[in-house]
Amino acid sequence: MSTRQMKSRDRIVRQSFENRLSHWLVAISTFVLIFTGFGQMPMYARYGVASLPGMAWAADYQLTLVLHYAAGAVLVFAVFFHVLGAIVNSRYGIMPRKGDVKESAQIIAAMFGRGEEPPSHKYLAEQRLAYAFIGANVLLVAVSGIIKVVKNLPGIDMNPTFLFVTTAVHNAAAVFIILGIVGHLAAFVFKQNRALLPAMIDGTVDREYAEHRHELWYRELHPEPAATGGAPLDDVPLEQSA
Image (tube, rainbow, N blue to C red; front, side, top):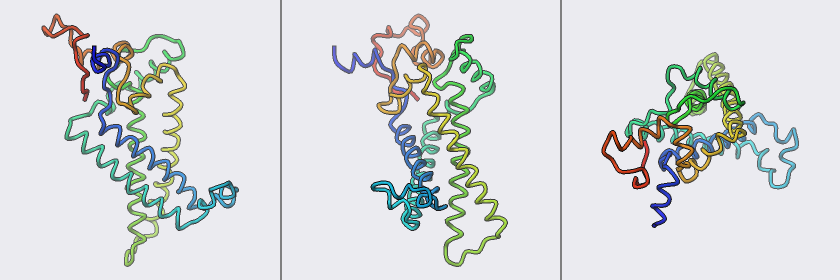
């Protein structure tokens, strides 16, 4: 039996390379933006961060500004790449749906041993809500950030009130992103969610996990042989999921 055949029986492709690339570009650029954003206040010299070995650069305003702009450019590219890929490939499974709030409450309750989780599609209801929350704030940060960059260009004069509101939105959205990231990472405290971690590395999840926790998605990938005249599950090759 070949390695690929063995893998096809144990793992299911959950995330495409494009999804993983955009995820990590957003994640890395966001962390750089958060770190350099605090550096613009400035606070690293004041609170001793710049005194740590190898961290003197953190107190260099011009350097952190350049890094902030560079990370912002990567974030904008990643968002554009992600949205374009979703449209071209018709991948909308992560978008919130009616009833997600109620379903998320059921999933969270089940994690604490109260009841059972409802059957789920490729993404859990709570994942769809988290995507919408973080995604909306990332867009706010990106758009307000572009405005803040443009206002620094020679010959550009913007209304002070507009700039004040833009800065307030930028900072508030950044705080919400930090809270969203904390919540996103906290989800992996629960053992049930840890099976999803490999999907953002090699793109796959355990077949048995998918069959039991993402039952509706699994049925889409593997219609009942009796209903379709298809082959048994063990003969299905490693699938490329949407």
